[in-house]
Length: 199
Ligand code: ADP
Ligand code: MG
Image 1 (cartoon, protein in one colour):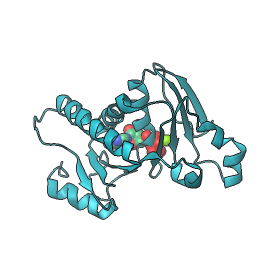
Image 2 (tube, helix red, strand yellow):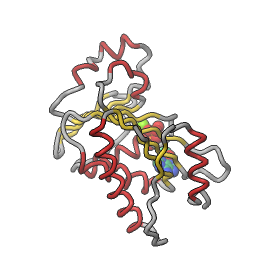
Image 3 (cartoon, helix red, strand yellow):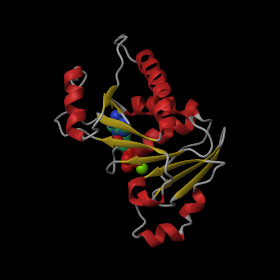
C-alpha cells in the first residue's frame, strides 16, 4: 500500500494538514503518530482536533497520558511516551481506549504497536537533517488497510487546496508525493526532486 508524504514548512501548515484529515474520520478510527520529541505530533493533533470541533486549548497529554474531548465525536488523545513498560500500558487500560465510539489519536503509537488494531493510519513525522530546516517537517502517511488509502486520497485533495489558499505562491501542483517504500532517504530525495525542499 502506497504511503503519501509531504513536507510541512511551518506549524501552521502542519495544523492545516492535520485539519484536512478531519472530514474523513469516523468513530472507531485509530491514528498512530510517530517521530521524535518536537517532531510536531501534538501540533498535528491540534489542527485535527480543532477541525473536529474541539474549541478549547489542545495540549500535550505527555504528563497526564489521556486527554478526552467531546467534539463532533468523542476524541481520545494519548501519549504513551512516558509509559516505561508494556505492563504500564496494559495497566492504563489501553485496550479499552480502542473504543468503536471514539476517535483515538496515539502519540508514540509504535511503542504499543502490537496493541493497535489491524487497521489504522500511521503518521510519521521527522525534522529533516539539513541546515536551516528548523521549521520543516517531513510527514509520511502510511495506510494500514485499504479504507485508509481512500481516506488519504480525500485528505490529500483537501490539504492541497487549503495549503495553496494559505500560501502566497499559487501553484496547482500537489505538494504530496507517493512513496512505495516510505524510508526517510527516499522521502527526502523525492522532496528534493520535487523542488519544494528549498526555502
Ligand atoms: P511532539 O508532540 O512531536 O513532541 P510538538 O508538536 O509538541 O512535538 O512540538 C513541535 C514543535 O516544533 C513546536 O514547538 C512547533 O512550533 C515546532 N515546529 C516548527 N516547525 C514545525 C512544523 N512545520 N510543524 C510542526 N511543528 C513545527
Ligand atoms: Mg506531543
